[in-house]
Length: 305
Image (cartoon, rainbow, N blue to C red; front, side):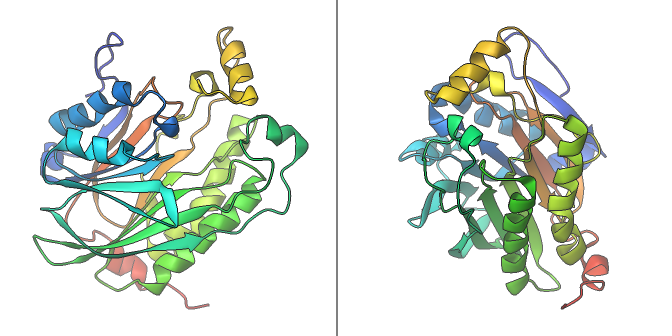
């Protein structure tokens, strides 16, 4: 952990451990795989994540394409399953079927912008606003039969951070509808919280995630370090905006931000991220204790207003 080496080695950065007992925690992770354009280079990271940081309970994938989540599940082992809803196939969740029982899932429609600003059309694939979704999965832990809500999301790259905040608030409201005093909550994914000013991007991200903390007790596990997770110079995609970003990245010009987050009301034993050069996003993970941590205390402060 905390090691860095050649490109052929696992590069883990921003690792925070509270105790060596983290090995006993269940690992949850999120990763935007950049359409899986370089998926073979990513697969080893998932296998090494389990080897170096413990049992992977679930991995949320954004920018999934047909067959990719299934290939990731096969890499992790025979007990892993890949799930995605027909209404949101770009969001997939790979989970350990021996540790988690999936009861149901639903697709949440997120607020949609009216028009894509002209300058953003350089890197947005569609000229028309896209309907974005979140995937909400209701699990039961097989060891203690406790419910677990998992939200996997990919917020709009188009529009403003205020717009993305509205999308995240919609996700929070959906989680609230299924919320209970013994319910574990995990919300993770790609926020696209961007600003050319890194400090403003961090402030915007805090505002966006505030409803999850205030209403569900779900804390942003990476807030203490606030490390960048997205790099334009790694966006080796065919769209014009990405090609321009990769070109200027060769000369050290980039505007990295922390897009990828994992928020939870569970006790965090370890968290960090893995540098994945075959995607423009790093992989973010957290080892979580099986109990709901401070969830009951936070639940008492939830308002119905």
